[in-house]
Image (cartoon, rainbow, N blue to C red; front, side, top):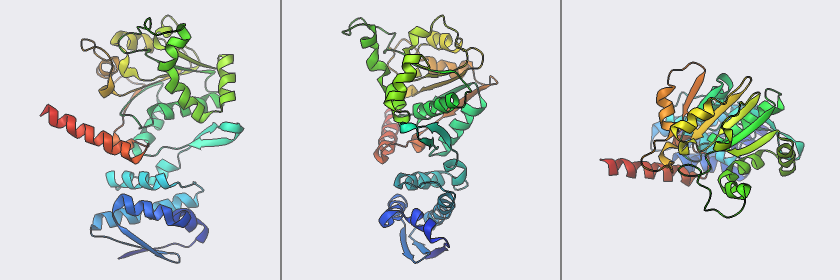
Length: 322
């Protein structure tokens, strides 16, 4: 049995969670057994490596809670996954990195990375004018890019935000859909609105859309434009062709930043068309000023089952290829 002794009872309550729910989550994630006596935490288990990692997680989360970070139950699982993947990873460096935005009701709120991959992604956006983020659903590709865009707008680093996606599988064939043009493209752009509304109130979003501060449009509408002083996000880029990708990247003007996100395993392009997100990684590899981020199931921050589903599909596809 290994013990940890803590001193600040107020911080201990934050670390343990209501009814000890944080400790229960760590037990579930790690498979170790945790007991408490006053300000002492006792950890034991059949796997000494897991016990050691659990002790490190508790010690680092205590410091994070002491720094004023509001721990949630999901954070305990994220912390365990980070330290399990890399015992040398510093949880404080990740969790205490805050992207400040003005949230719903005008309240100041922040978004923090929940994995090493997400931390690297945020840092890449800070350092580079063009960033490519490739990875499965649930890794925060779009959400974090949106948070960084709103923060850049709030800090007057840019004057507007432009959100775009390929409007359809294969090449924006919209004719078969009912309604006018806006009604036709709305289903393809809806996920961008969802991410936006999660970060900014509906009324504020509508105000910024009406004023043109935020623009949401299909990728085809970017042709012929020059985008100055803008934070531009190209989402679902795996559904862009190589020609569309080149067109998009050459729209970038002065004072602008572009983030391109996508999952190359989920392309809807026809079999004879290669994804522009695949080819661009080969064409622009090594170009100074461009960042590439690869996210994986380790970085998934949705329901815990999502990570397991992605891992199961990856195993199945590897077996099929063999």
